[in-house]
Image (cartoon, rainbow, N blue to C red):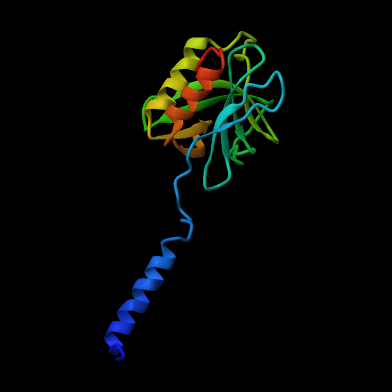
Length: 171
């Protein structure tokens, strides 16, 4: 006995839908992950890569405090720079922007000393990592312009695991 054309059509469509469900999603939200240590003095890092290929990385620097970087160079083209010193802002869920002193160049923006040469206060580091753990998204700004946007799904777990395996201040 042969099934009617309507049954074959429905079965074919169901099979196609079933197979499509196994394809990777193109607009999937990026999840935070841990990078394993690569050397004896490396503690690894927690990071996320967005759909544009921008990477936000939080590791533990040699001084025992967090080390934040945004790569590659995502600086707005219309901003004028006198030198490489900058203040990068993290705006979590549209809230008050939190500042990070940075050096920005051809390879991206990296956490640095305050503009006067003073160390960046651990309290400000902790404010950023606490907000990243609790929020749902972050805009990274320079000169009032968004350089990059990241989803924060999984950030709390990744930063928590990094804190558990390091003695890093600011996590």
